[in-house]
Length: 96
Image (tube, rainbow, N blue to C red; front, side, top):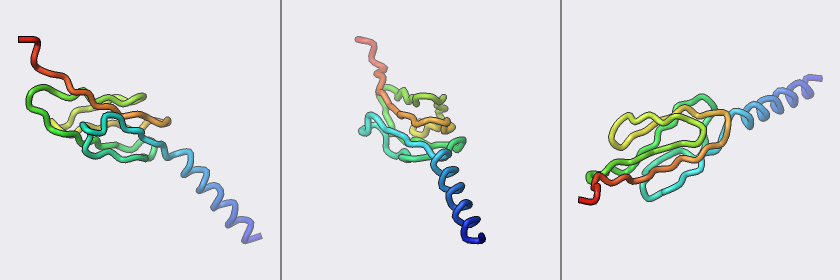
C-alpha cells in the first residue's frame, strides 16, 4: 500500500512537471546571445541580445508580449505553450 502511494505521487509529480514546462525555439541565433531552451509556465524569461549601434532590434515571441528592459535585455512571461523567440535588425538608415 505504501509503495503504491509513493508510485502515484511520483507519477503525479511527473505529469505536473511535463505540463508546466514548455520549450523555447530560438530564431536568428546570430542576434540572440542567450535564451533558455525550456521554461516553467508563468516564469520570467530573459533574452540577451547583441548590442547594435546603427539601428535597433525588434525582439518578438510567439504567444507572449516582449518587454525591453535594457538595450540588450528583453523579457517575457512564459505562456502555457511552446514559443519561438525571434530577433530582427531594423536599420536607422532610411535610404539617405
